[in-house]
Image (tube, rainbow, N blue to C red; front, side, top):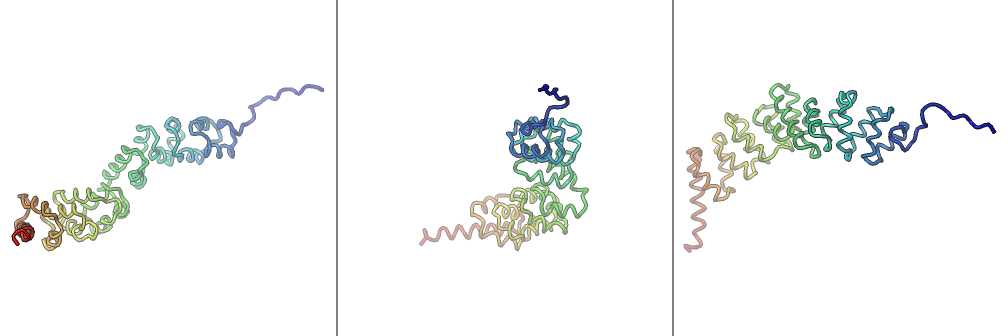
Length: 269
């Protein structure tokens, strides 16, 4: 038998080698292979953007893999790649920060709320939104009032637009710390103070109530409904403040005296 001549050309594709696997096999490898073995997949010519997105969606993707993707100019120009790199917990810090500064408004808002994203990336994303806030059209402010991150929600609350005020008070990301900080801002609109004082959630928060009592624009009738539930020690502390308005000081003194007399009654009896 005449021996067969050796064939020339590229070696046959291996379904197990990420560098040479056909697309169907590469799809399986990207979903199941060891994350460190996937570095080889970046060399496969059939790796397109849809498969690249799947690589970037893997929560266990190592930093080296993400860094290599970022170094490929044809990939890093893609907006969806930037979004995925910015929000991935293993993206190298400088890469993630560079990507997040190039994102659009609502992607920034979403990333600022992702617990899995790097803390610094979340903070920068929120900072970028805050820097844009004054120039945003009303429709975008309304969306952010409903769903924006805590500091953005607080900024919109302080702004006090009639179209966003009630919406932002219902924002699930707004917290007591941000509300009380808003109440310390100079030049706050009476509309904002009144809305917080009437709100069924914020007006029952103990620390928000103290901030409202201290604020000179809180309606006195509303403050009077808070006093019976304020601890006596807090009432005494409020009496020591020189900034408490005179009409409220009289009621604070009366409430302190009333409770003090009530506490002495059993002993006197």
